[in-house]
Image (tube, rainbow, N blue to C red; front, top):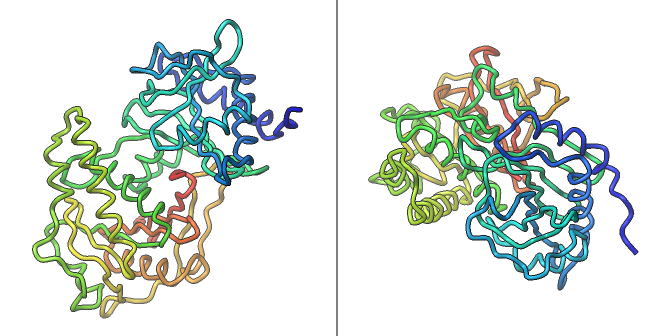
Length: 372
């Protein structure tokens, strides 16, 4: 007996179809029936267990002819929850997608691929009952979230947030828009911040990353000195890799080196305190304790937004918004308005703090829905 229908799948399928029709990239947009079928199957697969483990699956609606070196099954499989859960252990590693496409008029799982064309429709199982609809950005070559489904709750990403004055470059990149920020390597530098954010969130210990203007030591006025883990000289391994790329097409070796460097640097944020990195991506310190700059007022209010449709802007005290880590980050950005602070919570929340001249206060951008 098949599972009952997942109501959210039918409710959002026309909206998802409309999104892909208005973001054409040379690929046919999946119709509402296909979208509903794949979301439904992915949802029920997410509630199953294979040897006690929640399936982690990425489904891509793509013709195998449009992928590079696909792994093709001799007998395509039906896109059912049972079939997907059985396959999950083989495809749970990041970057492997199960390909789905009509074959002889029937929707089938034809095999796997690690290469997808731009604007491809992807549905990813993140956890039990937690799904993310994504597409691959042609501009940045990475995946951009379109909608998040958690049980009966659906969140649509609001791309218009990227057009708001003062939107942080890392947030614009998460939304699929390029915005070079800092002197190191333009768009790739911003993408490195996205990778750092994702890695910070994935280690699950919580952490803070402070990005300061290069060539300035003003940030030292906002941390307790001497610092237990100041770096002398600064660690330049990550910035050197960014500069070595030089904006050209990255090789597989370069991508592997970048991934290892990002993971190593992001791991420093798990140490109690904050990691400090300048906007040239040189790591200056970690485990730093933030303090209010001498003569500066305490932060009393911050403006909070989330790039989700229907989300209202609010103004709250830092204490209402989060714990000590969030309060310290807000204070740092208040005292060092040229800096940006990225904060990961142990519960999965992720916030970007940046000074907003328009609001004349610290702006907290909640972005965890973009990092799933």
